[in-house]
Image (cartoon, rainbow, N blue to C red; front, side, top):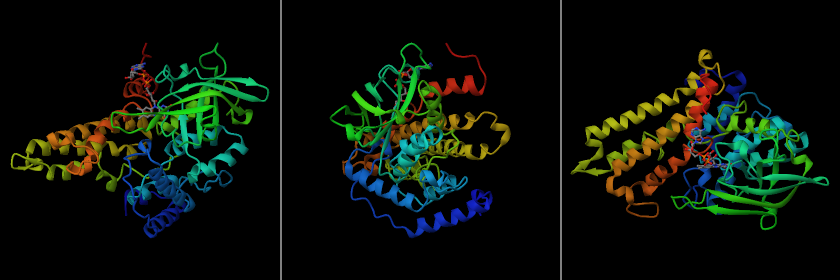
Length: 412
Ligand SMILES: Cc1cc2nc3c(=O)[nH]c(=O)nc-3n(C[C@H](O)[C@H](O)[C@H](O)COP(=O)(O)OP(=O)(O)OC[C@H]3O[C@@H](n4cnc5c(N)ncnc54)[C@H](O)[C@@H]3O)c2cc1C
């Protein structure tokens, strides 16, 4: 019996049986198109349609939103999302596309939305009928998030929004956005408010989404412009001037430290370790990479470097176990912040090592028939840089850990 199963409550044990049985009986047909490496790189409608179908089926089977109340479209269970996640990862299924909705919008709406908003929005978010995006960053507000300048002004019974967001992942598919903006220019923090806004229905009218093309050639994120977008009062979460407080819930969940566990179908477990990007997949890459008449796997220096990556990855995965040790959990962000920081840096180093193993062949990219592993490794390497920036840069994560977790003096 695995470590995970030994610790299951009776409710979790029953639920695990249900998940395992559904996952083994459900056959998800193969995609007819190449899928991207993660949700924030979905570019084409046929990729989104395939993944949306998968998320919808997993939701119908009860594997998504398990711990949310039934009235909000959830399963009404206790601590069962973690079980669904473990089983989905072990079953090696496609990833869930609505990650910003599931990971950030859903918990924020759950904790801060009025009942009508929760009941109206959450079931469609879980099923992926509505895709969500996060409108936080602006050209002058990234690490200094409280500096956002997008503005909402009250006119009659509506709020009228004007401004410009940037790096908005999935906005090109999004129906809805969680939006942090300013309602008062005189107070940096208390002048912020938090809205949920429909964007797809306003495209070409009061909302414009412009794709940003990355070094990889993909268009995962966008600029979003608002020109007199009108939203009703009900879409304001928690009330006027409470935006910073509500945003903390979003950020806590974005960094993996919130009370609602995010449904996840990818990464972190044995089968996923063999996917491009993970340390174990470097072994096969080395075995299939020619080097001085032999293979890179025959080179002891290379073998040593691969082992070092595997050890770092395995060490980081112990975070889940360490999270169960009370003495290490004096601060709720200690382990999640560490995990994001360490895993994102491991991913970058795995990518760099893959480039070294492939040698000159690392210049062959996706769509090149001669590229090793379909050219996925150079793509993973370039995308790995975004992971150390998104959800708070590594420098900011270190600052937060130093100041809030370790109690060190605040940086200037
Ligand atoms: C792949 C990807 C997806 C993203 N998706 C979204 C999204 O969906 N929605 C959204 O709102 N945003 C999104 N972002 C934006 C992301 O949140 C910001 O890029 C990030 O917060 C950094 O902000 P910035 O780019 O403005 O950099 P800046 O804040 O300008 O930082 C520039 C550099 O200065 C450093 N720095 C800044 N302040 C300090 C400090 N106090 N101490 C030490 N170093 C500092 C930073 O670490 C960084 O290296 C995404 C970013 C990426 C890469």
